[in-house]
Length: 277
Image 1 (cartoon, rainbow, N blue to C red):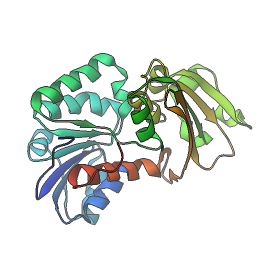
Image 2 (image 1 turned 180 degrees about the vertical axis):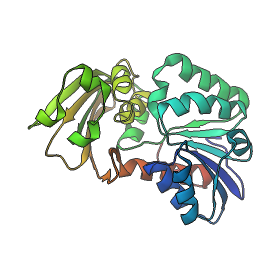
Image 3 (image 1 turned 45 degrees about the vertical axis):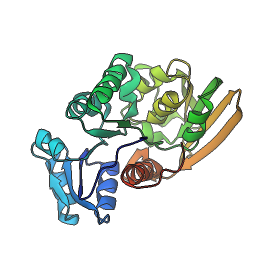
Image 4 (image 1 turned 135 degrees about the vertical axis):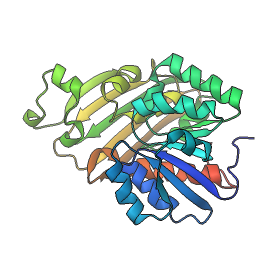
């Protein structure tokens, strides 16, 4: 089987109650075959606010119990959360859906999760996130792919408090025109911009790896959208696609499409039809 169904009266755990986790919880509230949604966040007040809005939401006071009672564990928090909680969920034989894909930049951790999932008969799901074209890259990678490049263009506010920029002495407020602030491989980009370029990690896992996927990050002070351009070439031909995303109003680092991608992935996992590779 491509994936294991979750059965009737599904229960899920969401780690993280930020923009994406909240959007998913609100959607799950509308699903008649979802019974309970456990939500964990270090900011309990955020979960309590969500509980007042969604009847199915419960605060996960004990994550081990929440995992045990859940059919699917969904991470929407951070790379640190992936490192801490995903192996525990896999050890319990639980399927996991990961948004902070950059955590898999470490080969040892990725291999650990792969082995655990195989041993315990569960799976790690990674949604396409804030870009289109991932399905095409997955298909192309079955043959030979010569190069994959992703160029990301974001507004200034998406990079506030990024440590890498401070170490490079880059003054965000002094940027008046589009400026390339990073050019290198995905393995470095994911480390330096953990909250901005999870799409690069996803693209790398779908295609030719973190060490071979080229990433260019551009700050555009006039930008109002988060834009990604993907170029890939290989024996299949060529792929070029643009995605222009609306950012969350309260979190400009995150694209709304990323949350929709997560919802789509949950629908695929729980449903009877799977469209795309």
